[in-house]
Length: 136
Ligand SMILES: *[C@@H]1O[C@H](CO)[C@@H](O)[C@H](O)[C@H]1NC(C)=O
Ligand SMILES: *[C@@H]1O[C@H](CO)[C@@H](O)[C@H](O)[C@H]1NC(C)=O
Image (tube, rainbow, N blue to C red):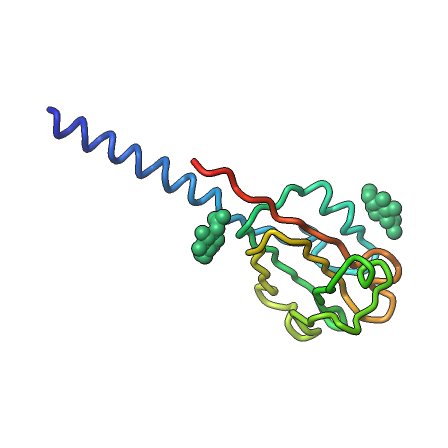
């Protein structure tokens, strides 16, 4: 009896633990069903889908000629200055399952597409700040 009770409690504990762990690893498609494309407001999208948490994964699905850069700071983000930006996904990478970006650090992630007017139209860019998860 005691043993069965303990086994049941343990199973319940494992279940709770796996639910908590599943909740940890969110995978979020940038833009939802709109994917990563011109003419869609990703700042608005990011506001509505915030907060993001550490270890959430952003998935970028798109077609050429669009791409995904990580910009170094707010100024380059505002100006769409890609000089010191880091290319994280080229125009050819956006098909199939898309490109996954893990938000592993508590920092500002400035994302933008560099093709022609994608960024300067104010649309194909947004920033995210993953928050630490509360433990327990
Ligand atoms: C995008 O949405 C944000 C937040 O709703 C808004 O402040 C901004 O003006 C919009 N940008 C464009 C280019 O429409
Ligand atoms: C994020 O994932 C890394 C690698 O799997 C892990 O070591 C770290 O503890 C995770 N951080 C949080 C806050 O879950």
